[in-house]
Amino acid sequence: MTNTGARRWLGLVMAALLLGYAAAGCGDGDRAEDASGITVVLFGDAEEIAGYRTMVTAFEQANRDVDVNLSPVAGQDELMARLTTAFAGGKPPDVFLLNYRRYGQFAAQGAIEPAQSYLERSTVLKESDFSPRALDAFRYDGKALTCLPQNLSSLVVYYNADLFAAAGVPLPKAGWTWDDFLATARALTRDGRYGLGVEPSVPRLAPFVWSNRGELVDDPARPTALTLRGDPATRAAVDWFLDLQLKHRVVPPDAEEQSESSEARFLRGTLGMYLNSRVAVPTLRTIEGFTWDVAPLPVAPGGVPASILHSDAYCMSAGLPEHGDAWRFIEFAMGPQGQRILAESGRTVPSRLDVANSPVFLDPAAPPKSARVYLDAEPHLRATPRTATWSRVEKETGTLLEELFYGRIDREEGLRRLEEQSRQLFALPVGGG
Image (tube, rainbow, N blue to C red; front, side):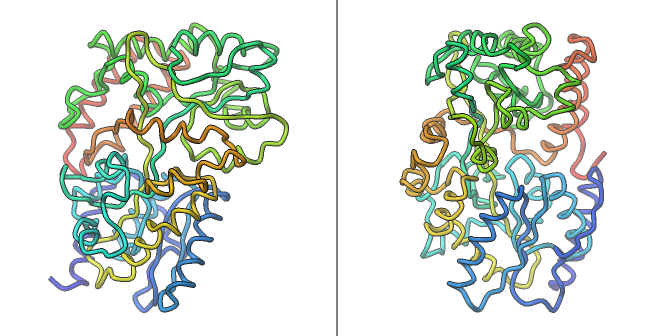
């Protein structure tokens, strides 16, 4: 098959695969047939993109024969729409940055050029440079690397230290329990402020299920359904999570969350704790009115420490004439210099272990002071299933979980519907729906 034919084939495959996503114009992200250099598509807010632009500039200075067209979008939904259209049109980007919870549908159809052989031949990078947990999340077949992960984050607790002091509650520390966490959130919920901000989604719920020794799905390797109501340990974690809003009222109610996001509330100093990954740091570094820091997630009674992996990887599109320049870019981005640049931006927990354990990431003068919390979480990180339909399962069941969290539907009925809906989604053939 010719390269043009391969592109057309991949376009047809991806068009069928991703019908569930809204089409979006490729704009300047299209890769013109006669264009020189490479196109890199990624997502992020303004602070994140600034870090990527700095890295691209450094790469071009070191590789003057390669021009990089950096084509950013605001978020992951926009990225999926961009990639859908690009693959369908036979003009995919050379390199794209994608979260492990979303890459499975591309990997299942052979739309990604596997990274394993390139890494094995590299004189710049080797597997032992990186966190094994981040690497394993991008082994679609469980063995060979599909993409190369550039970060290793986790779900953590951001907290307003000034509000803790005013409420007379101790600062959070490793080993604190669900009871400690709830008592703290209650103490901080007063005078028009709330103790906690958390998105009602499957990735936010997952660490609490795992900490209580439960499971999200019936079979992590070959899931057929979310199982949030049958197993006692899982159900207890689900009830505890939902009760943060429905019983204890330590989370802003529906209407207030709609009018002002938890992140905006935290920035304004009216939220005691906020659950997010490292992605929040560039924005939080704009805070001037109070002291903030980061702590690990609490541990379930009789449970184990747990958090969820947050990792994005550089992937190369399959079916292109050549991948040499794209791989050179990835080698630079994943090398010490590229990883240091993004670490300095605050956006990433470097997947390179040498950079992650260096002052460029751990510098206490650059908040959060307790940055080692992200590294200490590494042994306790778990990933969601690597399946072609996982991103759709997460997105569509997440909508129903939000309904449950805010009490718009009955708890028992909602959990039953959530399980049934997930079974239907897991059962879809690739590209089905």
